[in-house]
Image (cartoon, rainbow, N blue to C red; front, side):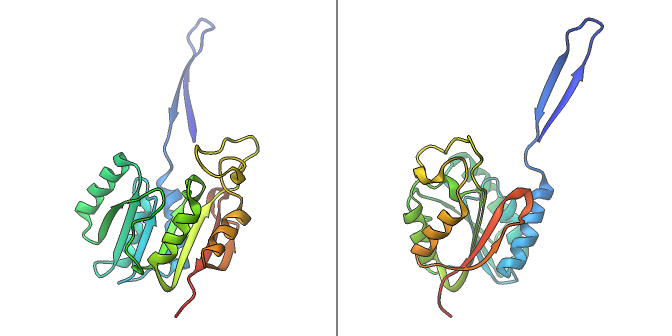
Length: 206
């Protein structure tokens, strides 16, 4: 969101300062509340936040799963990894992992649920990551992918497949890729906050 603060002197020149405000805390709060219900976070749950960014949702998940649970928080970017390590130092139920381009680096069958918020459209090797996500979920585990449709005229992130069309990923393409990896679609949610969509998948099993 952009806010402008302008001063107009007696002369006709107008001086303006544009301040860029980061994503609001309440935006993440809405996502956290919906994810908690969707993925059944509760005391003792093991959850992964893949592509955790600054860790807002990691902290929300950590609060939900309590001291008997575990949240794996992954990132590629070294600067953000350092931020996440700072969060983990204050939250004993958070484990930070450096993600790879082709592998989440999550332990096998470690998670009751995994979520990704505005991460999928940045994947340069989606088939490999999808296989890694599948391996990291317990049988019957859930995966929630929050993303957005590409806007006309927008530019694809560098290195992603051409079928993304623009900045974002068409929902049907993301579903095709994840079902090819073995996931089953549980639910489509098209009224997610900020005009995003969310698709809930499960890993077949108990």
